[in-house]
Length: 135
Image (tube, rainbow, N blue to C red; front, side, top):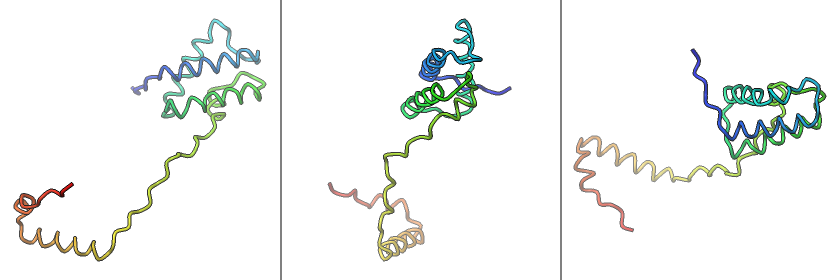
């Protein structure tokens, strides 16, 4: 038995808004007004199982997808078509930090200190004698 992920409420809201836009286009194959809520819940179940959704990232992307579909579709879209219409996420505004520069000679000194401590086997006394850095 497969465990289903819960459907985030914000995702259902966005899918309902998108379905409303598509309904206003009077596309052939559209569900009736009586069954649109079931359609949205079904989409939510499918979408929540196929991807990991992040609200802040994905709301604008879902809105773009439904606008794209409303302007290009000639028939009511399938879940696959909706997923394919979602634009890729924007590149992260956070840049990776540069690799810190650590002088090789300092690394060798520290490694020698570590080996000396380990050779003495007196690790507990080493840490009890170490004073915290002054601020």
